Image (cartoon, rainbow, N blue to C red; front, top):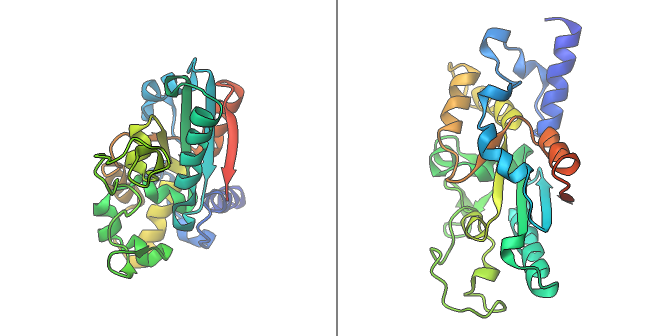
Length: 237
C-alpha cells in the first residue's frame, strides 16, 4: 500500500469517529466502494430535500449516540420553531445527518442483534438493563398512537423523541455511507469474519430503517445542504 493510500484511509476512519487503527482498512481497491459516485446512491430521493423551498430549513449533524441526544435536540428544535415562533410545520424542513457511532441509529434490529451493537457502542436497553440487541432509538413508544394533543403532555407527538416519531413529523434521517464502510471493517475485525467489507456494507444497507436516505458522506452532504440548500446548521456533540 502506498503512503498516500494509507493516509487517505486513516483520515477516513478518523472522520467516522470510531477509533480504529488504520491497518484495519487495508483492503484492495477491488473490495472497496468507499467513494460513491452520483449513480451509486439515491440522489433523486435527496434532491427534494436539498432544493426544498420551505421557509425554515435546518440540518442537525451528530456523530455520537450519547443516549440519543440528537433526537431530543431535533424534537426541541421542531417544537421551538413551530410553537415558539409560529412557523407552520409544512414550512419546516429538518434533516438529521448522522455519522460516526450515531450512524447506527439508522439501522434496524437485525443489525443491532447480529453485530451486538449495544455491547460495541455501550448502549443499554432500558427494558432489560443489558447491552441493546435492538435499535432502542427507532420505535415510538406509543406506536405513533398518541394519547394527548397537549404539546406539553408526555403522551403527545411533540414529546416523542424517537426516530419514528420524528420522521412522522417530517424529519429526514441521513446515513453516512463512509461511516457504514468504516463500521463494516470494524465488525469484520471485531468478529474475525471472513466476509469482504462490501458484503457487510450491502447487508447493512439492506437494513436501514424505513425512510432513511444513505448519502455518500455526511460532511460533504452537510456542506451541500448549507451552501446549495441554504440550511441552517446545528451540531450536536
